[in-house]
Length: 181
Image (cartoon, rainbow, N blue to C red; front, side):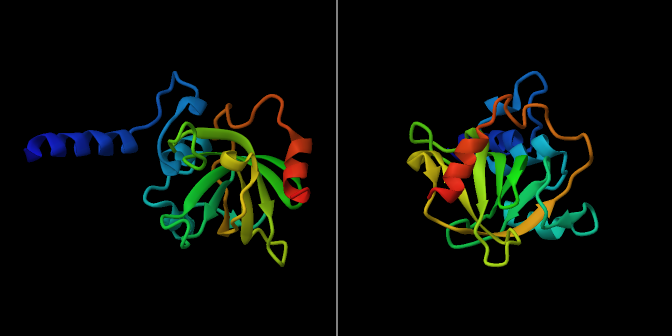
């Protein structure tokens, strides 16, 4: 009885720890945010998303300035019990950027899918990216929740995936998402 359950658990763990297939586009990935962010950014940190900020100390540069390819490290909160990590795909302006991430919005009732070039808006009082709002497919705009962010983890130069950003990102739409809401 338990043998089948253990096999399924073992297979699930192997899929979470395995690298993404080299032949597939990173946009085809379905799963958790952590393996996606690791593959998309080159930042080789393991464990729950909320632990990435502390794990990066002394291993990778960290800061509060968005840069393409940097990992956004969301803090643990009531709404994000395991935190979240995403990768900056475009910097639109001082308080608006686009990110590419996995396992945020529901699609066909399921989570895990990759979303490319979605809006992230800095709503922090001190303009330091410590609190943000995120585009959510379910409302086709910024969700109503705000999320605490530790900051940005800067990975190795040139390590980001070429699929990180689309060929025609909607900068205007991103600004409307942020300032029009």
